Length: 76
Image (cartoon, rainbow, N blue to C red; front, side, top):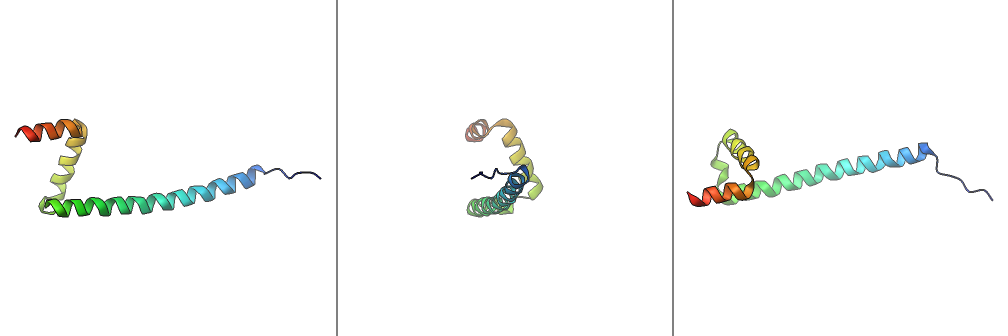
């Protein structure tokens, strides 16, 4: 009896299906992460910060590094 080999076309179809599943999972996880971050913002009162200023704060904190930014804020 001859074994049937998986064709490249079948393998490509499986890969595309996996990619679609991963894309859907990534979308769900991004939404979950955004919800978690939103809760943190509400807990600390950050919803009163203007979005542009919050975005700038986060970008600059990321550029500086979290630990360095926390050290600077702690000194103030």
